[in-house]
Image 1: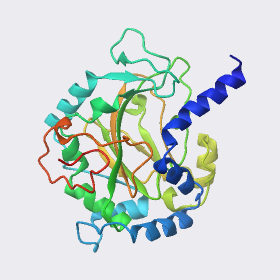
Image 2: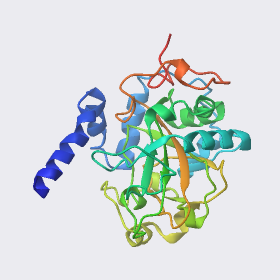
Image 3: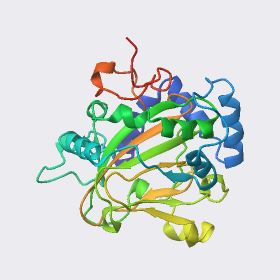
Length: 308
């Protein structure tokens, strides 16, 4: 098979999951690349969605920071014991190199891992992670999201992955600065489940860039391009111990630094306005999830949690 044929086949296979209504909406909203246009589109869509569960005003401190800075650190949601249980569970699950066409399933502790900078935990394993629904449905988090959206959010996508060193140490894919364009409006929750020091590939964000017009072409960009456009003073690096958690508007410029040593395990929950193209085709039964100790709203959880 020629190189060109292989590339065409690869693109076709990657497009198959988007051959549905969610996929059409996903690609349509990606045409809006400028921040003001996306804000107007989001306000329009919010008018047709359920009202927030929490009062719309005043904005919570978390929502206010998200609005102005594009990110906010979140405290008090997880305990060290919860983090340890989540890390232990996810460490025992099989992973796969997401950028491979026919990815093998391997253990993260296998003697030899695929040549990939990220190894993703399978979806079916992630949904059974201890405390997942408690974290995803934490009232402080949902109130912050509703303050930004002006409507009730949907948990559109949940994933967890390991970032690991590569032989050449060069940035790959999302290790280069970029903007996400995943839904009409979306906010991502990041939870470190391992200690993340400078050598472990901390997440980085350009403060305020979610509202700024520079570099809106949807491509990957070098450090030099981004720092020249925004200035080094806007670069924020998220190093911290296991349990570090932050909400972020990843339409802003961001990246995960390449891991130089060790491994980084991260849980990500995406809050969207509409069901996301990346989410499961059908929800799982509630019994698939670890028991929750907070309210689990049927609308917010509709993509992942089926109703009895």
